Image (cartoon, helix red, strand yellow):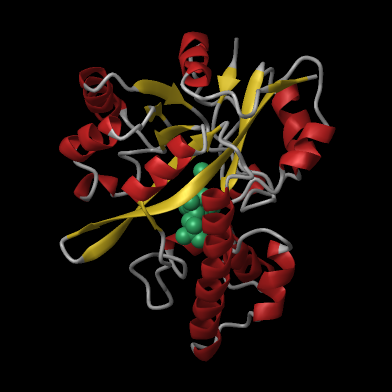
Length: 285
Ligand code: AMP
Ligand code: ZN
């Protein structure tokens, strides 16, 4: 069984439509793929309509969360799986985050326009379509306008969190998000817990506290983790009886990652499904 539990479609900031993502996952030889768009399950219906007999589909979402430490809100991504997408708290929070992403995306674009960059809000909104606005959409506008050659280059320069155009968004408190996913019958897994500066906010102690309030696992095998990060996370997971998953974090053409680049063991997926309360089942053909 070849399992990838973290992928993005153009329902958030990937470039494949949900149906294209399903076909690409099958072509990559995957047996199971989870669709985990940022702050939305909006791609699910289209993905489910394109389902194939050979590919299990898992509905998920990557929630934007934050941990306050040292007077600063650190961004932590939390993967939720098989939660009830109609759960009122989830629906409310995803709507709030979509509005917050729009506000913040427009604020970044305004700073760029004032700085003389040749992009417009309309251009970014057209690229985003119905998806919650993310920096990769702005990156694609910068590429289309000839400011940078690639979205990667945009992230290294104009979109950098340390750059002059950056505006923070107000994300969900991490503990609140874990509790919310648990209450909605889902499983929760911290995405790339050592990938992008999370270490400053996400101590082993905090992971232990999250395990006590329902956290299901840690995404250990992720392209942003080296051998030492993986070893550390495996140790923390073992101590707190957390599952360890592996996934590509595929974004289509926005990032140079391939489906199935990292994968999850079948027995881990079984335990993850067992941790949910069966509100939604994984969908096969
Ligand atoms: P945002 O959520 O709007 O702050 O944008 C951050 C998201 O952009 C991350 O969650 C990744 O999905 C994506 N991202 C980060 N780095 C890159 C990159 N170099 N190229 C494309 N997408 C990226
Ligand atoms: Zn992701």
